[in-house]
Each structure stands twice: as structure tokens, then as C-alpha cells.
Image (cartoon, rainbow, N blue to C red; front, side, top):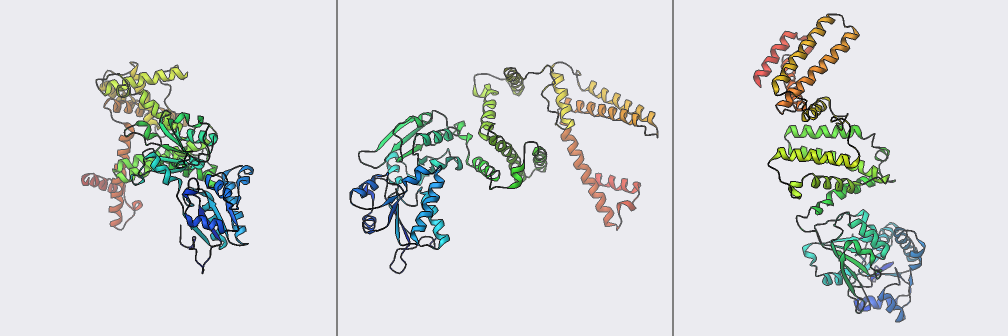
Length: 512
């Protein structure tokens, strides 16, 4: 809040609008100076008359108007706050006035923020007269020391705010059972259904304060929830796996993506579909692999973020179509990891990583049967979009699990030599003439040779894709050396003979 937006109340600079706090309950929480201002004011508006202090002011002869009728007419709270700001500022142009709100004007008061913003645009002076906030009476009731850290959230806009499960959380403006239901559903995305919460009504109001502890899933079953109700949510216990279901950073990214896809967001982001984003998912995956190969941990962090963005992007598109959202994605994989690690989260025992793999495949097969997705072939389930070398390795591995494999690498190597000979024969048949049918045959035989080489790599647990990446990078380094040497001699590659280039290539190998 800047000094320009809140003017001090002096004779030389009288405010157009004085915003006063009415405290959390009756007039006992209203400062004497505020009470005098209200008694002397000829033009007073209260955000609502449904408040203990408002009722006592009325009984004491203090006149005021309220915006309760606006609450009944408007379809959303945003409309109410914007309407209040417009009317208060319009009235302030006709003369000084007082606007009163429950609690402290700057604690969980959206209407005050709307007035401050609009008043600054219109050049109106605003003074803030503080009061006790609902937190001043709520925190002692809950025995919370704010110095230890806590999170304050607005129950009316909970979907727009990050939920930090590691901190004590207070949710205000839980006006009704309908709002309580929406708050419950949002919190159940982040906390266990049975997580114990405390619901407090009219904190600090003698004779009206009510406090009840109950499981989260029963929040909207309390008939006495009203405009004086707040909810306290204790932090999740350290080490609780559910605490990882709703992290601040991920919520922030999800909210950013939702905004980008909204009506007032980015045109390009709004146009994207699952299909249009496929190429970006592939590109970001390979950029992660490049970062890993580089060994630069900061680059790995950056590229993993780019890849995560693609996941959040797809989840947001699905959310807009009411299919699923990011929480469903996280819950699905979390449940899968727990289900497929019975030796960690259950009673199963394993003797080593080989047993883990066996259990994993067995559980995975059972899942497919349960979903009706079990294929007729053992080779079903291998994505068609995988790079060819990776797909070849997976096909071979699946076939090997049912016994279709060489006893050892020697059989696989003999197959490579056999395929090399077949390639030679096709080349001999083609001779110098590049007949189309011979080229098709050559393509097929070269494919067979590559497939056989992948099989040899598999026997030695070498990833053929990674092996080729290493060779590609090596070629780039050595070719860069050739370019450097030719340039230093004042020549170009086209002016250099193949024999010279080959000689420099051999030098590069020695240099390495």
C-alpha cells in the first residue's frame, strides 16, 4: 500500500473517503475514535449490516446505509465488490463519507482494495482507520503464534490461491454451507479426507463464539456456518506422502497456465490442442536428454521445467473439457507407484532389483487385465512413436521374456554378420544402377542390420539410442576440428581434397 493511496486525516488534507474497521464482533472491539467518527458522520455506508457491531450502532442511533441488497442481486462476489467501489467513489464526489467494514480494513477485505484502486484513478483521497481484525481474536482461540508462520486464504477465491500444506492455514469468509462445500472440495485435493480441521464461528464475541473440531470431509455438514465463520487447517505431518500432492510451486505453474488459457490470456496458448503440442513434448524431452549429457545440473533443472510445462499444458486443456486435471494426473501416478512397490508400501519381500522388475511387470499385466486393456500379443503396448532404435530394443526385450532369444551374445553377433552379408549381396546386385526395386530391398536389409546391431547392444545392456548419440557427438567434435584446421589455413572445405580431410580427421582422433 503506497503513501499516495492512503492520505492522513488532517485539517489541511481532509479525505474524501474514510474507511473504518468495525472489529471482529461488537462495539467493544471498535476504537473510541472510530465510534466518535461514526456518531458525528452524516454520510455513512457499511459493507453489511449483518454484523454484531452494525447491530449495536443501529441500536445506539447511528445512521448508515448498507450494501446487503447488492449481495442479493449480484451473481458473484466480484460484482458486489466492484459495485461497492463504484458507488462509494461516486458518493465521495458529492461530499466526505465514511465506509465501514467488519474487522480491519486491510485484512481480507476485497471491497477496500477495490475502493483504493478506483479512488487512485479518480484522484480521491482515502484515509484508513484501523481496528482489531478477526485474526486478533482467532489466533489466540487456536493458540497460533504468527511468528512461526501461517497462511491466510480467502474462502471465496480458494481456486486462485496456492495451498501450502506445510504451514498452518486459516481460511476466512466461509460464509455458508455452499462456500464450505467448495472449500472442502479444494482442500481435499491437497489433504487427506480425514484430516482434522477446526471450524470457528464468531471468535471473540461473548456468548456467540463456537468452535468445533472435525474431519475435513464433514466441513459442509455444519448447519451453523455463517458470515462470521473461519476454518483452521493444521499442517500435514512431516514425511506424510500426501503432503507432496499439493506443492506451492506446482500450484503456481498451474494457475499461470490457467490464466494464459483464459479469455484475457495469450492468443497462442488458447489456440493449442493436445495434437498441436505433440511436437513440443518431443522437443522438450530431447532437450532434457541433451542437458543430462552435458552434465550441467542448472541446465537439467531448466529443461525439466520446460518439460513439466508441457505436462501442465495438457492437463489444463483436459481440465477445460472436464476430462481430468493436474491433480488427477498426480493422484494417478502416485497410486500407481505405491501399487507397484509392494515391497516398500506393503508386505512383499524382494531379494534385489531383478525381483522388483518381475513384480513390476506382473502387477502391470494385472492392471491391464483389470482395465480390459490386455492385448493378444506380448508385443502390444509399445508406443509406435518411439525412436526406431528404442522401439527395436523394447520389441526384442519383450520377445526375450517369453523365450524368443539367443542363448548369449554370440548368436546375436552371428546374426549381424549374416545381415552384413545380405547387404553386400543387394549392393552387388544393384551395381551402379540405382533401380528403385533394388533400393527398396537395400532399405529393408539395412533395417535388418540395424535391428541386429540393437540386439547385440541389448545383450550387453547398452542403450543403442544413447550409443548412437555418443557417436553423433563425437562426429560433431571431430568435424569441428576439421573446419577449424581448414579455416586456419585460409581455405574452405570445398577447396580441400578428400585425402586431406581424411588426414585431418585422423589428427582429430589423436587429439582426442
